[in-house]
Each structure stands twice: as C-alpha cells, then as structure tokens.
Amino acid sequence: FGKGDNFRAQSKLFVTPFDVHETILDVVLGSRLSESIGEDPHGISLISSLPPNRLKCNTTLSIPSDFCHLFELKTDSCEFMTDAPSIFSYYSDIPRQNRPTWPDKCPTRRDHKFRAFQDDQSHCLCATNEREWFPCANITREEFREGVNFSVDNFSMRSCRNHDLDRSLEFDIHVKENELVSANSSTRSKATAKEMSDVYGDTEVRSSFQAQPNIIFLEIDSVSLSFSERHFPRTWGLLNHHKILTPNGGRTETKCPTGWCAATFNKTSVVGQNSIVNQLAALSGCMDQPWDSEDMIHYSRDGKDTYCPKSGPFNYDEYNFDGDDDVSHFHWIFAVARKLGYVTFFGEEFCYEDSPYVVQGQSVFDLDVDLSLEKIFCHLARIELMFDGLLNSERLFGVEYDTKNIPDACFDGKSRGDIGLEFISQMWDAYSARPKFAFLNALAAHDYSLDAAHMPLGAEKYDKAVAGFLTKIMDSNEEKETFIFLRSDHGLQGGPFPIEYSTQIEHMHPWTAIITPSEHHTIDLAAFSSNQHRLITGFDIYHTLRYLMSPRIANNDERKDFGVLFNEGIPPWSFNIFRDSISTTRNCIDAKIPIDFCPCTSE
Image (cartoon, rainbow, N blue to C red; front, side, top):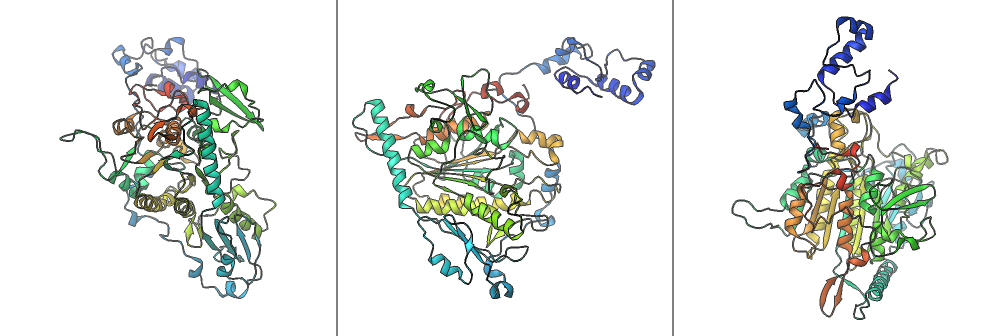
C-alpha cells in the first residue's frame, strides 16, 4: 500500500477486531465501496491513520473499560511469552524409530577398502597446526605421526583425495602439554599476583593464585529452551540426574546429592538478533551499540565499533581507545583469562578466516588464545577447495561439509561435532596442573534448511556426543574443580522458519544450563537455585565468569578474595548468578534487553 511507515507507527496503538473487519472491507472492496456499505462506528481501517486516542486502552472506545486492566504494566515479575506449538514439536512427537535419523557413527579411514587409495598415493598431502598442506606421497600414517612434534602439533592430517568424498583422510588429534604454554601461563599468573600486591600494598601476597577453577563454555548455536527439550533428551537426562534439590515437603535445605549441581535457567533472554550481539554480551559484557542510560566507552578500530560499560577503579580517560592501547583485559574474557594465568582454548566448527559472522572478527577485540580449532577447519576447507579447483575463487568460511545427500560429514571416524569435544577432553588431561578456560561454539543445530523433518537430526546426534562428553569430564574430575556452562546464543533465526510465530517466540528464549561442583566455595546454593527462575542474559553469564576467574590469594594461610582489582568492565546492571539473588521484578529495561527482543509479556 506504500504506507509501511504508517503500519509501523500504528503497531504501538490499540487495535481491535472491529478495525480488522474494516481493513478487510477496505482491501477487498476498496474504500469507496466499503463506505457505501456503511462505516462501523467502532472500527477504523488500518490502511488509514488511527487517531491519537488509540494510545491508551481506556480512550479506545471499542474496548470495554472492564478489560483495560489486562493491559496495565505489571512490574511484579517478568512472565515470558509462552512457546507456541510448532512444526518442530509436531515432528518431535513422532517416535524416533519412525522418522529419519543420521548414521549413529562415522566410519574411520580403515573402514574404507578402496584399491584406488592404496595403489595411487602420488598426490597425497599432509598438514599439522604448524604446517600447511605439503606433499607427502608414499608415506604411511604411522611414519607421518612419528615425525610430528607432539608438543606443538595438536593434530595431524593426511589426504589422498581424488573423489567427491574424502574417504582417504587420516586425521588424528593429539593434544599434549606444551611446556612453553604452561610456563607462560604460570608467568602471567605471577605477574598479575605482583600487580595485585603493588596495588594493595600487600607485601605478603604469594607469587601464585590458589584454587582457580577450570571452565568449559559450550555454546550450541541456535537452540531455544523448547528445542533443547525436544531434541537433547540425553543431555537433559544428565541435567536432571544432577539437578539442584530445592526445599519442599520434608526437605529443609537446598542441596545436590550427587556432588554436582545442575541448574537450568528457564528465563534466559537474548539481547539481540544474531550470534555476534549475544556472544559479545557473554564474552565481553559489551554491546555493538550504545545504551543511552549507561556510561559507555566507545572503542573503534578498523571500522568496527564496540561499546563497553565503564566500571571499576581505573581511570579510562588515560587510555587510547582507537587501537593504540591494549584494553582487552578490561573486557574480553579470553584476555582476562590469559592475564590470570589460564590456558585458553577457542573453537569454531568452521574456518572463520575473514568471516563477517563471528564476534572475534566483528568487534574491536583480538583473539589471542593458546589452543584453537581454527587450523583444523581451515585445512579441511582449503583441501576441499583445492581438489575442486576453487581455492582462489571461494571463501574458506563458506565451505559446507555436509549436503542433503551426506547430512553428517565424517572426518576419519569423527563427525564435525566430535572434533571440538575430543580436543577439549585431551586438553583437560594434558594441562591438568594449570587452570583452563575453553569456549566451543557448536554448529550441530545451526541448520537453516527447508526440510523440517531433517533439520533437527544433527542436533539429535550431537545430543549423544554432548552427554557422553559431559559424563566423561565429570567422572574424571575427581577434585570437582570444573564448571560447565551449557548455553545457546539464541533460538532459530535463519532460513524460512522465522516467518512462523512459534519460531519468533523461541528465538528470544535460548537454552542455558550450568553444572557446578556442589561444595565449591564460590557457590551460594540458595541464590544459584532461585536464579533459575529469574530473568538473565549473556551479561549475567559474563559477570559470573569474571567472578569465577577472580583470584583468591594465599596469604598467611588464609584465603581472601581479590576481586576488586578485576571489576573493570563488568556491567553494573549484571548479576553474579552464583551468589546474587536476582530480583523477581527485574525487567527488560533493567537487564538492558532491547524492547524488540524483550520476552516479558508485561513489556
């Protein structure tokens, strides 16, 4: 109708069924014919402009005054919009044995018996994380591995690809301790301890931190809470087995009988549309645009803008925020972790080189970590394009490893989702003496295809991998010093399905669960449990991560917290989920959730 702006303006006004009736007449018959029928005194066509009295319920004549109290703003609590039935809930009601599934297990290289691969190896290539693809004809897998420097090479690959499916790929992950990484981690820890000593004038501060916990941050992209309940039954079974038991009946205290506490947060909200905005909140406490009511610092570099909260004792005015000074340790969780002596890991399950879709490339912060998956997936993408003759014409981040005919790409016995989990598992064994922080963004559920029956299959297979991985980490962690954040950045937000109402509602309601050791000194079980039913966002996840990492110093055989020095950059509107009791009256304005993404019905 050429009146898009008019429609947007009227979306904030009160509209009734009478108006819908008038609009239908206007569209079907035209304004002149509809007027000849007789205008309804209660209704106004939405193609025309609604009068100012439609701003309020009690001045909208066609709404009985008895119903206006239903529209009053309620501030007592945030009630989430109810997730509606969807095509995905329909398919999930069908027993799994009666619908499609992905293969349960990936075949290994040795399962493929093709003479062509054994007879002709003249064009075979090899690679490690320290070396790009190089010719390695007529060399066996074992001979290649014997020449690998395990202290610096975390993986090795050998490919003799001469066909559509690289069944010749030989791929090994072998994460071993790199003594230089451990030494640098210890050096950074001591340097920060000395900085704390200088700031506080405490000459008795020892040279190292004590009892810093390990942290695994597993983000499963595009999974709403409802999606997780439909397609991650094994993981939910694990969470329910270790869930916090709250007081009821004859139980008078909050406790976790298994030694682990699993909490699921049923009021988690997004703070924006896509992964970048939501990851920026959870990994830095920052935004991609300013929030008018907050004192924000504007960082700008290489055409990228990031807005961060100004908090903590330091004078931010002394720093150059145009890229000359390194201020990432005020905000960027990977820089904070490294400064505190953590061995760090970052994983994306694709080659994100030059990708416009990742937070590490679209914010002002550089990604500097000890270990990562980048080389693995960039090597795989590069050889895919190399053998197809497209290396110089296609972008590496655009390589898709799965197709409609091959839904689950396999890499010598490992699916794409297995690689990061195996890497982290080996990292936990290799660096057992150092505190570790690992972040993995998993893409198993990031399927925006047209086929609703097949779209969740990757997530359902990944469910088995995640449950197995978490069980292994928890069973092997006898000292219970590992915290696990299981989270999605948002619900489904791409492909054709966001046109559906249920998908739009689920998008705002991502899955968030946290597993903690039950007896850890950082946890207030009562607050942790009650916060499961409070409005939280990625900003609160970030605050909680920073609190976990804040060191405790051994001083005269007493342990005390020195978190004040590390308060820089923590959003003042955020909460520590482990210790703060979040108010039931918290709303989207309080939590800095843009109104377009606010899930609270009262707002």
